[in-house]
Image (cartoon, rainbow, N blue to C red; front, top):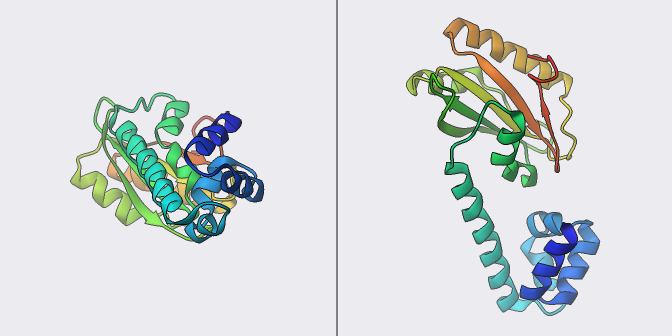
Length: 195
């Protein structure tokens, strides 16, 4: 699949620059989303026109992801949540996103409630549940990413999730799952009995 992405990029951008950045980052997605614009600019044949095309490619991808996110999310299966939130695998810092659900477990709203650094982001109980109460949510799902690419939960992730689950019991707003997204993978704390 990544070879196809690289081939498509070379149809739009100078082949030598795509090859150089993919070689440097090891993967066309990482080259596209993690390379600085200045790195692309300095690559062979890019220049201002190539940068304009690069920005257009990123904008199209972002618009497609936003449009996909507006489609109904099936929260019954962690794989579907992962697919709907897969844009998070490309974030360079940890983000915590909460999915607020109605009585039928349909999405009311998804909200990024915390943006951290490369190794952590706050799981702020006040932010999570003030929005849940305001939106009259009947349940929530927490989703966050690990920029390292490894989707396994840290001890801190497990402790923080248990605190949020306990708070959810007090508010009568259950936490259905905590999905951790890595590069091309995810971990469901619910499926693994960690809630």
